[in-house]
Image 1 (cartoon, rainbow, N blue to C red):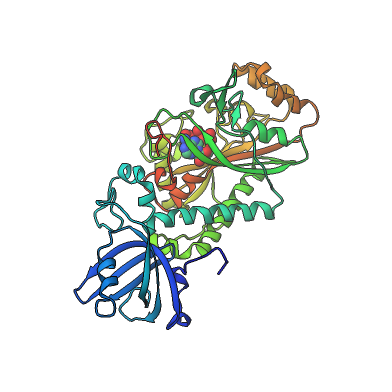
Image 2: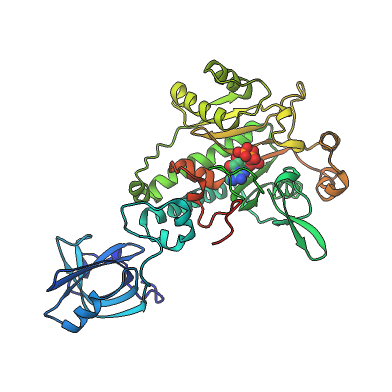
Length: 442
Ligand code: ATP
């Protein structure tokens, strides 16, 4: 145990601890007083340890311990004893205890109640909600996912970077920008690191990634949009086509899924989730084929339309039925849909089509990207077509005049990925303190 760890966690108690003194610490989950004997379930990060108090051994201690309020936080010094009845196989016979902080009663949210509280109440009392091990498990899976992603990208020579989140211009269109006051100037919260990661492609740091918040003033209230999400952004240079970019996205998903199945095995078990990492390459469906598939399934949709939530969902069902695929790419998005907007490279032979792709997971887009336009003349033409003021993008454009290699990349929504991986009904379940149109506290 490190010198700064002062309590033994319940999952650190082993057969070797039996008969030995121990100090445990945690929250009082439950007290069962049977008159002469009482059982206190003390919960910590590792699970629950049972404190068994006998009245006849210490009546004063018995009285004090049985009058504790639920969810108070204590340390207990005592002796470990093996016990067939106790959860975990051990109990602690207490000699002394200290209340570090008593909990008020009633609780704002039940921790072990069978009846589930609604999501709003849970989020309003998130610290309490997180005392439930199945809620904490989500964030352990999320951490394992990020760890898997970092391991893969570092292994492939990608350098982790951090770019500004206070910016002068947006990359994804004005409607979803959050304006802020920046000294005596107007600024915005970054919707995406798009302009910076492309800028870096001209620097020699030509394989980079960033894991950071992205801000979108999303007007719609959906189960897959939040105003602040964690974006994994990847950019790589000297590519030949969007296929190279897709291969990296595929590598990230495949290796992080496999990492999670081992690193977060017990959390997945607790959540009742089985992950079978689908073998790459993931199927590729062109946008055109996707529309035809949806039409033939009876959906009213036309070429040129956005797939929308409904279309994405239905395509997810079709891909699962016909190809047993939970993960698949939709490729060659039409230019008119402005997938990737002004910076997307278009097909030289058919400018109505881009090499842009989405990666969908069980009927929901989690990644979007492709090859970018690196030729200055073409890029500025596309920007003009989008009605953009080139002057405000000079820092971005400059890099395209002094040696910009062909490059591409994508944005990957971390919470959406975790949401789909764990079958969570709402993206907010995968965010500790979600931000949306109404939610600003906590
Ligand atoms: P959508 O069409 O679903 O609104 P988008 O096309 O605006 O998404 P991009 O700008 O391509 O999304 O962003 C790349 C990825 O970032 C998305 O695939 C998604 O995983 C994630 N993402 C984008 N906006 C949000 C949001 N508001 N909340 C959570 N994740 C988001």
